[in-house]
Image 1 (cartoon, rainbow, N blue to C red):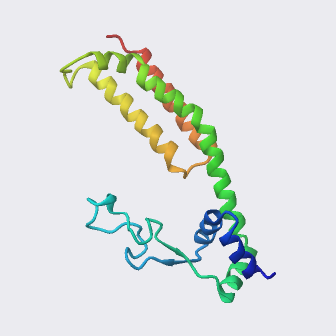
Image 2: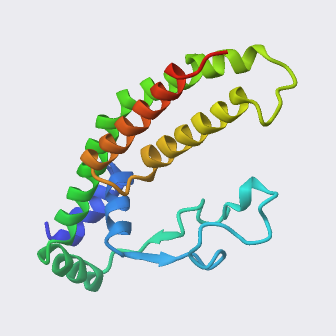
Image 3: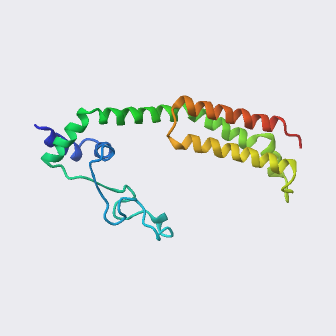
Length: 179
């Protein structure tokens, strides 16, 4: 069985989503004609957040397996493109596993810390009060943590470092707060 037959058989039986995702990541796809490869349609944000119904937001469809495409794919794999893609995915997964416990701790410190505990008990808080300003600072720190946790663009070590610093800053803000 040649590689084209193996790919077609795998697409029909073995984990088609994973195979399609890898082909897509390597550039073997046809851009969606309806959304022009954007995944969303401008001006239709009020309907399903503008997600293209034709491609489901994926920006295109995996190209049809032809002998020429298989030869291109073999050449691209030979250059190490697939290994680079898989290494990137592994690094992102490792980063997510590394930051998950830190993210949970940050969320708990944010939610149950002295500042938000006091904030949730008050009504009509003056926007210049120490409580309001402390809550604003903690919210901004938590936003930084959320962005770092969701970006997937940094290494595990970088993400852990930023989240550890953020956690320390939130703890310092909570520890320094007196109501």
